[in-house]
Structures are given as structure tokens and as C-alpha cells.
Image 1 (cartoon, rainbow, N blue to C red):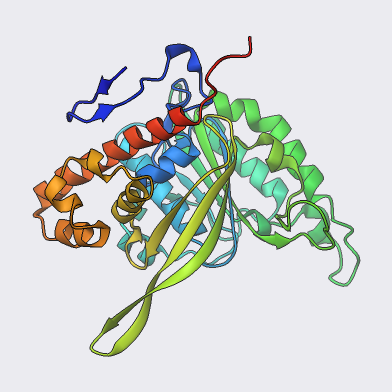
Image 2 (image 1 turned 120 degrees about the horizontal axis):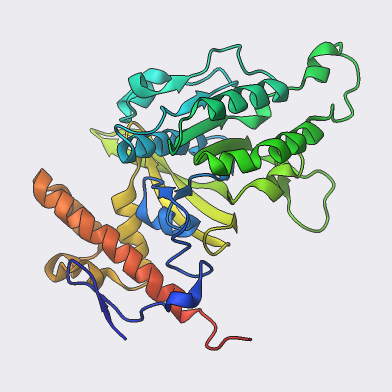
Length: 348
């Protein structure tokens, strides 16, 4: 069966209505906001889910804070007049508001926590609970913690620096926090976006080589868990001067409660710009041999890099029109690929 889209693109297979959320298209009962990149949206199941907990994990320079900034910007774009301003809690004390503003985040519409207001897991619980209570009926919200690793616990703060901690109960406190607030988060339609840093899983001989702090609570309570890895640096030469202008990132969704898990994609992060979503979308379409879905045969025939260079020469209106077609082509191509990998019959 063929499905024709609004822009004339054709979908080879139409997913059945009783397929549920395990295959693309994902669970339509869950409201989402964009990640800022269409192919990344498909990886996580159409975007970051409201009313759920998201955990973003990565090493240094993998775009964790940048993706949180893009998520806040997308939230404000989707809810320009309704919804409470995103609450950004940053115990790392390293957030640069001027850089975030340069990336396009309207910082004047954000709710930034005071530097010393959230320093422990207990503070995090109280602040998040207070934010949830401040929301009105049917008023969506977003709460960012950047990062969980920078939080201590009340017991740790009261202990002398040289005293042994034995884990200091942080993992137990995190589990208790989510047990008490998960249902409230869902009812209030709040996206809780938690950033975590990578930790080596010391002594492991079987299983994952990396982990993150806070115990196993997020493994259970998070609906979307994404691991980020830097695969390369992007360099540019101008007048014989070479500078690193960005990094190439690989994102893998290892847990997904609104779509299919273990989907991944690559994208470039350009300094001062953010995620280069157009390039990521076009490169992915080329990887799965579906560039023709864009509907620009003359440009597509010139190759991916030439296509991107030519696209940059378009005026704003033409550029946005082609970008819209690219995003729709990604959604259609993703659905086609998922359909190809779907079981051919049901078990029951």
C-alpha cells in the first residue's frame, strides 16, 4: 500500500493502526518536543517525551549541555504563550548564558536556579517538587538538571572530607526521589531532562564498560536513555589557518518507552551554531539510499556535499522550504526502514 504525504512524497508501506508504539510511527498518545534534529527525533521516538524522564549520558565535549539548550529552545518554540518557562538547574556552575543566547536560546524566558539553591539530591527533590506544584492545570513544563554528577548528598556534606563515604547513599536517595515523583511528573506533563557524565565501570569483564553515577534508579525510571560519543573533530582551513569548528557525535538510544530502543544516528555539532540538523538528515538519507525522497533530482544527482553546498546558496524562503521537505523525507524513509525490519507475522 502506498501513502502519499502532503508534499507529494510517497511512503511504500503504511504501518497498520494496531501496530502500537514499538515501531515507527511511535506511540502517538505521548506528546513530544523536538530534539532539534529530525533523524535524532526518529531515534528517540519522535522527540523528547513530556511527562517522562530523559537521561542523556556522555563524556566531555559530546554536546550534553548543548542538547539540553536545544531542547529548551524547542520547548519554548512549541509553547510560546502556554506552559511554564523551563527550569534550568546547573550545579556544575559552568553554564554560559551569553553562549546559550548566541545559539538561539531566549534566556530571558528561562528560569535559572540560583547557584547555591540545588547542591544535594535532597535539594533536587525539593526544587523539582516545588516546580511541579507551581504548574497549573494542563500547563506543560520542562526541568533540566545539568548534571546529576555534580550533586552531593546531605550525608556527604555533613561528613569530613577525609572520611570514607561508602557510596554515601546517593543511589538510594535517587531511587526514593523517583518513587515519590514519577506519577506526579507524568500527571503534570513535565519533561525532566537529566544530564549524566560517563564513568568507567571499573573491574568489569563482562557487560557494559561504562556507567554513570546515581545507581540504577535512572535505568528503571527513565523512559528515554541516550548515550553520546564523540567520533571526530571537524576542522576548517581559512587563509592557511586551521581551526576546530565542531565535533562529530554518535547518539544511541539504549532505552525507549515511546519507540524502538537501540536505534542510533550521527550528527555534527558546530560551535556557535548547534546541531547541524540539515547535514545530519541529508547524510542519513544518503546512507540508506533514499535521497530521492527529497524531490530535488537535479541537486541530489550532484552528491551529498554538493547538495549541501548548493542548498546554502538558496534564499531564506527557498532554504526553509527544502529543509521542510528534507525533514519529511527523513520521517518517511525511517518508517520504510522500520517496516523492512518488522516481523512478518504476529505470534498471537
